[in-house]
Image 1: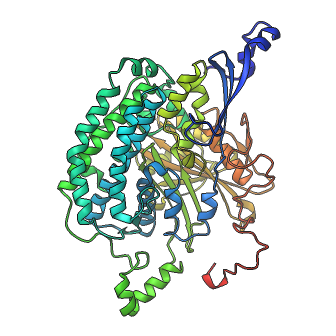
Image 2 (image 1 turned 60 degrees about the horizontal axis):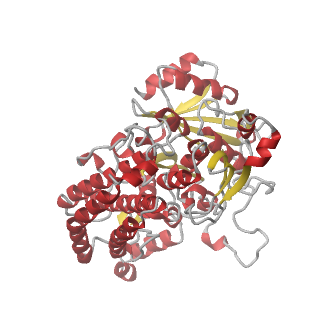
Image 3 (image 1 turned 90 degrees about the vertical axis):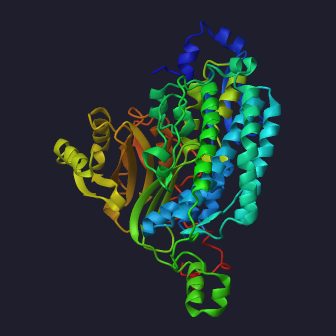
Length: 407
Length: 164
């Protein structure tokens, strides 16, 4: 392993005078337009070249794990939204699946397929922004403006499901609050028809663009071995050549029903991360088409009266519904004792929920395995020796979301 | 690879170390002696069992069990066979120190820092054990159960009616 410590780097210089004359410290962040979030990098620079980097996180730490110990299981949904806010539905639905695993609920097939559609839409939205911004950071802002339009269309669909656009609070334990609306069907059909040609245009803008390739190939590379040692998952690991995807390795929500491939890269550099995400968007479209064409009829939630709020009309007229409504709202529903780990393939990689229940109304312990937290640790190693403009593009292509990093 | 197979392999290799085992929701969970955790994980990583991936490290606090008050939970993953494993260690508040895994997995660095930050567990051999998400001068470890989420001095928030 390369010794990247500052003392080792400084030893390579002949004399103190040489260091004094050449090196300087640059604070990149905490709030810098190019860091896309609130985190600080203290860089030791020799001209344009980074000799040493040290990162600081925690600027927006909001104690979600501690807060979870005082909230009931439904109320935690809103916390998960605010971690990776670029693909909030995956966080939501992943959390609900964890609780369902704990309480032993099997949801109807329609719910599974609805979840798959929404999670893949979220993945597309997440990847679009990451790749659009990677282009922007290397000087090509046009692609980002085009792709923002497409993401807005995805947000329009979220709005049909839950009324919100960004922090969606979309699912419920056992399923969804409501079924897809007619407008949602209309928007989705239109999206599936018109998005691929527009995305293809975006692909042609950057994928074989000489300037973009020169800027990204070889930048911020990490080997498969180091990536695994750091605990990389998701597109960042796949870019290094490891075909690990939670959707295939441990299928949830009926992912085993769909036909799709896992794109992998070879070099683990910025260009490979970009390309893996590009290809994953095509795969996501494929999955959405399959799920939507085969969307089963039936209920859009499971029969879990202890967790799923009854219809409002029933609450006014039926005693049982009123009791359940009260129990859920006041958080009086007990859950089984036990511990469960559930992972989903988030927009960024393996998003895991480790939940310990002592049978009470709130989790005894809830730990989020947040992929961004894992990636950012490797950042100094990936940029040491490169120039600062490469470091910016590398950070962007890793898709570090500050909300998820700090939780 | 099955739960029985892995449990048997670990028990055979470290007969003195395994304290108990269970399979909550299908995942093999083994409680081992605190002092042996590093060598067990080293073995799991480098032997033919092939647990090449450290998924997660986190802490937990059980104030009602003084001998086993503080716990550390490790999630490991054998990606080739797609097998997950959970290891647990427990310790008392007086002896809150355990070997660091940074030599085995680079990713353990921040996971252990986070665990230290929240629970005060000292990881022996860690190259840079400082709080990571909280301020360095915070002075306490906020995920311990003795620290209430809300300000205990407030009187305008009475939660008694809400089952809390």
